[in-house]
Picture: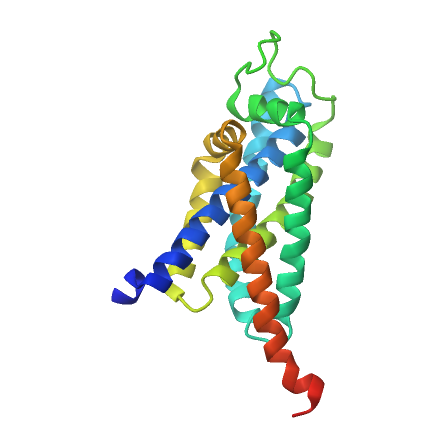
Amino acid sequence: MTEFFTPEAMTALFQVIMIDLVLAGDNAIIIGLAAAGLPKDQRAKAILIGIVAATVLRIGFAAATTQLLQIVGLLFAGGVLLLWVCWKMWRELRQNHAEETQAIEALSESDIDKDGKVAGAAPRKTLGQAAWQILIADVSMSLDNVLAVAGAARDHPNVLVFGLVLSIALMGIAASFIANLLQKHRWIAYVGLAIILYVAGEMIYRGAHELMPFITGS
């Protein structure tokens, strides 16, 4: 347990917390955006489907990913995947925030933009369409989250377990709060993005070293 409080473990812990905050918020925004075009009674069902699916997927991916990253080459591939996640997040942070407002209105059931409606500007859709969009997004974002946490805490099992539990808790309990927090304080998202970029670079670097003996034949 004392290993949890070493400088290296504390650094990994900080990275994991920031990664969880940013990716849980991003996942919540996507769930809210998919649910925003539904009537109020269906919106709650879609959001519940999204949060439960994200929680289950994180547990499933966590069980598999920590083992898969031990396979030579997959650490490198995971780092490359996280680079794509960084690019996607950067584009989202630079885009108009009007859609985010509709998503957070749907999550919190509050009229943030004071237009007299909750998520009134979102395009209409059916519950089936919203649920399908949410499930597809959850698969991608849950894998991204688990990969990033596993990459940041790879040499610290206690931090890894804490990070995965925190990720599940944030999605299951505080999704709306985290999404609202990130919209109000954009700098948190940029710090999280920088940390994910660093983790991606480190995974690629370590993965390349693992691959070198196979490439050179030595």
